[in-house]
Length: 83
Image (tube, rainbow, N blue to C red; front, side):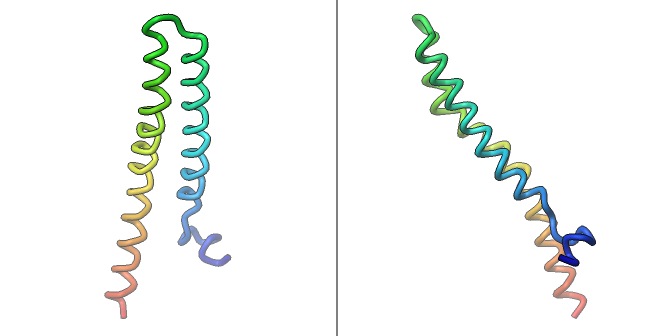
């Protein structure tokens, strides 16, 4: 708890994971809606949303997580060199 209150433990990676799953669900639902209600070539757009949408959301979430992982790694390096 002390690490959380002194900002040594990050909360944002957990929030990013939650937002990732919300984003995946939103993209898939939107893709299904476009697939069902679309006409002609719109159906291919809906299928592309279902397949490529979660990949795009994953890419964005991973880019954000990398920043926090770098912070954790640098903190570990700092702690190991301080000993």
